[in-house]
Each structure stands twice: as C-alpha cells, then as structure tokens.
Image 1: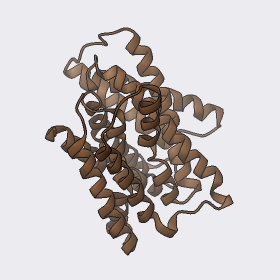
Image 2: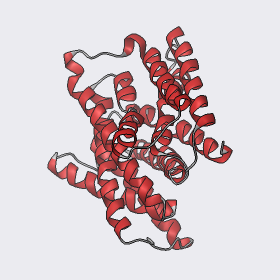
Image 3: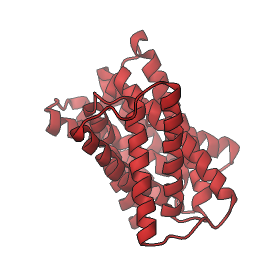
Image 4: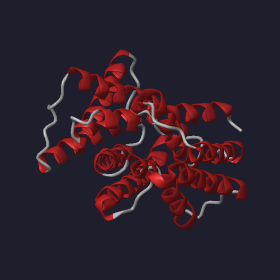
Length: 287
C-alpha cells in the first residue's frame, strides 16, 4: 500500500466534504456563480503560483485539448452539483453526486477491460451500502425532487468522464500544469452557462465572496488537486471512491456548525463506509 497516496486521498475526502456545507450556506448566490468563482479563483491562484515558481508547459500537445475537454465536463459537473443542492434534499445531492466511482468502474471493466480484485469490489460495495444507510429516510425520490436528483446523477457522470480523461493526461503532465488549465476551462464553460441561463456572476457580498475563496482553496486546490495528483498512481475508480465518504464528513460538519442531530443510521453507516474505504486503501493496486 502506498501510504502517501492514501493520506492524500483522505485529505481530499476531508477537503471536498466542506463543499456541500459552504454551498448550502451561500444560499444567496446562484449555483452557476458559485461554480464559476470556485473554478476561476482556483485557476488564478495556480497560474499566479506558476509565474512565481515556473511549472513549464504541457509535454504532449494533445493533452491541451484533453485538459480543455475535462475542464468543460468539470464545469458542467459543478453547475449540476450546486444546482442540485439548491433544489433537492442535500442528502440526495450528496449521495447521487458522488456516484462517479460506479460510472468509472463500468468504463474500466467493460470498455477498458481492466481487472479489479474481489476485495476492492467488496470495498466499493461497502461504501455504497454505508452511504445508503447514512442517508436513511433523508433520501427522497419524490416527484418534487426529480429534477434535482437528475442533476445530481448528471454531475456524477460528468466528473466520472472528466476523471477518466484526467488519468490519461496525468501520465505525462504535472498536477499543477494540468489543473491550472482544467480549472480555467471549467470557469470559461461556466461563464458561457451563466450567459445562456441569464444568471449574474456578481450578485454577492463580501462574506459570500470569502466563502467562494474558501471553496477555491480548500475543496478545489487542496482537495481536487490531491485527487488529480493521485490519478497518476492509482486507477480512476479508486480515486473517485474516496468522496463516497463525503456524507459522513459533511454530516459531522453539519453537527458542529448547524447542530444537526447524528442518528444511529449515520453512525453505523459511517462504520460500514469507513470499512469499505479501508479495504479499497489496503487492496488497491498501483499502476
């Protein structure tokens, strides 16, 4: 087991788990605006860092196009995710929005013909079951949540394909060189979406802007960059599996911030999800 990669994925899990909490707190900012500023601020920080400490350019020309395509999908992912948080139950959005490993697994098993050990597959199964138990009676597929639930599933599909593309790019490119273009492409995509959807990108106050900066730094640069770094060393399904622990962390954040009750289903579901992630960590195969 590569301890460094496991630690990075745990850091990624903790970081991205703050995203739904901040997204819900920014109730006065529309979903596209949240997504745009998260990506744009993260991109600017990484490009400025590259000016201070040069990172070089893409080593393979086709990877520029791949990074742009992955960025477009990432932008679509965030637009769907934050919109889902606003129009469906947060439990629905959190669970349906973290199904990427199951879409990447399908691609890897049936298209790329890759092999996974039974213990890893059992770990993935445990994380799914644990997430379902955590959500318990909060999960609701009633008709008033249908659009939001569909958005959450679409955001999972978008990030799954983006991660698959990212795996290809990361074999030849550094994390920062890749993600600075990835986030910039995502922000440009979201800018276009804001025009088409007629949603303002500038309707927020200072406190809300600080929340947007937090989203850019913690769940994006710290969280997502850890994910993209790991893509060079472990398969996409393994990398995408760790955010399945997000409902656990988000629930505990909600307890301490909003004093939300932690029920038995959250406790036992968390144990099962944690066991699944341990199995994945221990039995994952490095490339």
